Image (tube, rainbow, N blue to C red; front, side):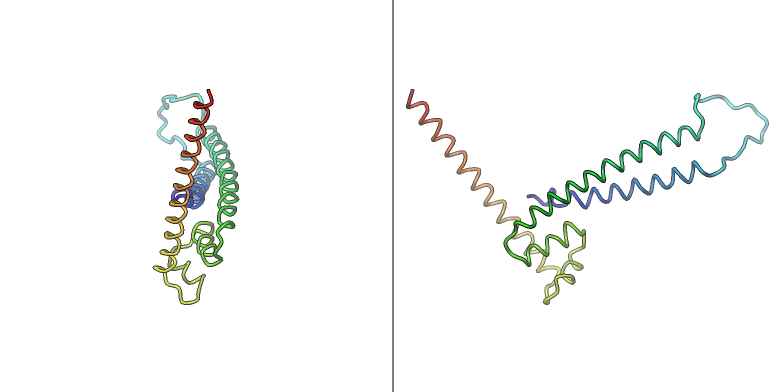
Length: 159
């Protein structure tokens, strides 16, 4: 799993928080009384819908977007936790969980892990593990490609 994939849950959470703030703003705007037209001058109709109708539509759309992202977040968290649970070393699992599931910063991860670990140390443990996994995955892909070529060559020779 790449750092980008590991960080997906963090960024989804941030998107949900930003959307929730925007939803709160829209709901406040929809509930706030608007300034009336005190000039006495007629207003040009810009559209057939009122401000409240437009805000209501935006609110409904944003609520649907938030709900979809929350579901995506649940699935991403489950996928991430399954991957982390397969890490053989408990310290490394704990580091990954604090960093990528809980979204802690490296100094906070080091503090949560304890045992005299520094932010630099937990960062190195994390990225070394990712590098080892990347190398192992590439090795497995090369081996699979070789087996596939050997199989194809065997099939051609049989013909």
